[in-house]
Image 1 (cartoon, rainbow, N blue to C red):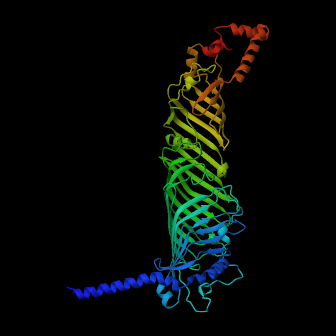
Image 2: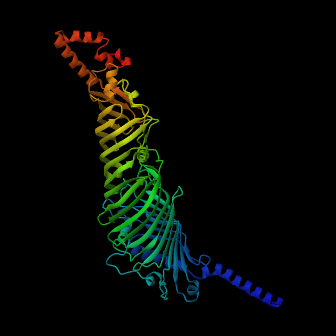
Length: 568
């Protein structure tokens, strides 16, 4: 066992060492005046970065393991903004204190930026504000000796960056509508942490980046980058893996009016000329427009894309979107014009279960009639999307086959249409086929060349419009064949003379459609009939009108429903 005398001796030694360390903590900062390096450091860094640089007072901080400045700021390129490019709450410089105290040698081991805020701005020509940072082409490289050489001529050794850390940073990104001098409502990525190792502009450095969004989403990235392309930093070669967890797509209302929770795994790599990315993921509660309802089913996807920064353009290939058992293929191109993303994409799918598609209709803000839903059936569609993301125009064609539109009794809704009052379709509308062409813009949706075969009615054709408030304005024609169940039913109730083609209109809204007779067409047909009757009976059209109005059992008496008969 250790004797009491030896224990007391060790305790005294430990106390003495603690006292020395405590004394050094308070005394050494006064003995070493590192702030004398600050003016020259600001000047040379400003020259090196081609930006104005301000550094707070430099002090030795033994507790922090080196030196510390209360703040750091770097001005932006005046061509982009008069504001600051970077602001940092504090700057920590990790050094070898032994070399600093005993050898007057400054060996920098790490650099730590606490709570930096970076503003990224992109000009209409595609240049970024960070691209102009760097040495003037006609100047020599600034060395560590240039920055750290003391004013009294004492020699100091160059520093080595083993590690650079960024803690709790914020990154502001430009959005559509912003200009180089006036960015408007930028996207903000917050709580960003960065860990760089083996930092060297002419070598390969490793990095780990993580961040959090305000709503709890997470972003993680790790990889390698370098050597840095000094003339165009955005074209530096790199390779990284990326993971997004619960990231909300609604980062900024100026960027996109939709929303959804994104989870994705991807790889991103650049050879300095082309950035290639591929991956897969899914979006929960997808909403594609401001007035849409979040989709009840998740949307999964896989993609592969190549982007050329110099051309500000890219292509999408081998990409797929799926919901449930339905799958669609996506391909095309995209480009950046100013701060706007312009797309030229094609989406195609065959035999997609219709029940999966109706969730996307809700996300697009399209409301089905109250209490109705598709049961069974498939959708085949070819869609093309062109234009900037906030003024996208979608065109194409779609066809539905063998579907049940449950909870929608079309026969009862057509009861007030002359010639169709006797039709019965039942509680569920059976759609044999339904096809149309369409054009969807931010202002409205135009449906043309609509053709359908509906059980209990026959065929219906026509077209119309749906405005941005889901109001309907359709002109349709029901075609009743001379043979078949519908014609037999009409014959049975004494409506043998009902015309083959019966026009009607659909107004109201998508959630509450209203079916009305097309009076303009009916009036023309009625006038033609009266003129023909007048010619046959050699009476005036006025008398024919009076005769037709008094007749109780003729074709027009039976053609109109009782509720409307007295009005005509």
